[in-house]
Length: 434
Ligand code: DLL
Image (cartoon, rainbow, N blue to C red; front, side, top):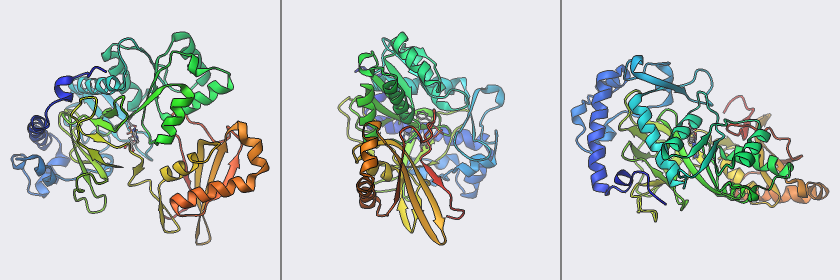
């Protein structure tokens, strides 16, 4: 598979480190001069841009959280005049006011370069016909991937999400070879296709590039089998840029990180101390080349590990493990820490369970309750209904063995859990205090 930008993607790591240091020094100088928030934070620590002499000195810089971005809404963290800003996006999924991010012409060029790397790594070439089923609009997913696809020369169909029958019609008539969207929407497309009697394996579709939300290996396999494709994962966040931060190559062994444009750290989410090599930690990202919206040590709240051994594909970039957990979606139920991804894994390990589920957390008196509503496949629905007690017991035991909690299992008819065209909602927490 060709490497989009071999010079940077296969750069020897010492050379990369030198490049990162130069870029870090200019970023710190840039924000110190232009963003009052960062200047105050640096002054409060008595740190001047010239104090950054090595990559380790990044730790002299303050960590930045969403709150700083909210407090300076909408443009307070911009490092250039709006006149220089040619695009604005905002974050999805937060309550209240969104986080607003901006891009200069140069930033858009970098962003396009980085999504071009991600799509090339996944195997997309100029010969592909790509259907983008991400939302466009303020979400970074659609636009970010769109431009990267165009840069590699692929033929892009900016379908957006929704109207699934129409998506399927396009796939059949336009000869779509790759789709780009959220993994949950990909599964929904598979489901609608199956209902409509469309044989996805008979179509030219061969690749799927998925991101924007967590998904495990079970989900990947399910998508690959049902759509007859190779599925790769790619990661990013609006505050840092959008998609393009990291993405898997065809070997599917971790997401190659764009280290020439970002400095990545992993820290203990509680103490903020660096984690030992190979350990799991919260991913912290400092942008190295951004002009309009640079970020210093941005707390992603995403947990991962980082691997630096060279990948079979030849890229020298470090790879992050698929993100399955966030430091802040952890539920504490009856004192037990639960990640929704663990429940998903437990469910998918049971035959006949569909990846459509809803975790409902509530409180009866002083007692937390955990209910998992799940869909089972139409093929075995009536069977399961006959043996519901046994089936519920099997699912309940699986969850208990992975999560350590008894859950109430409610089976629901296939197709009854709400489908979204964007990010799936898997948890409803009805407790008033946490
Ligand atoms: O979701 C950017 C994106 C769009 C990435 C399309 C890849 C593809 P936000 O809406 O700001 O940006 O959400 C960012 O979503 O901190 C993660 O928790 C989660 N996330 C994004 N991609 C993945 C992924 C976009 N591949 C937040 N795996 C991040 C797991 C992901 N989580």
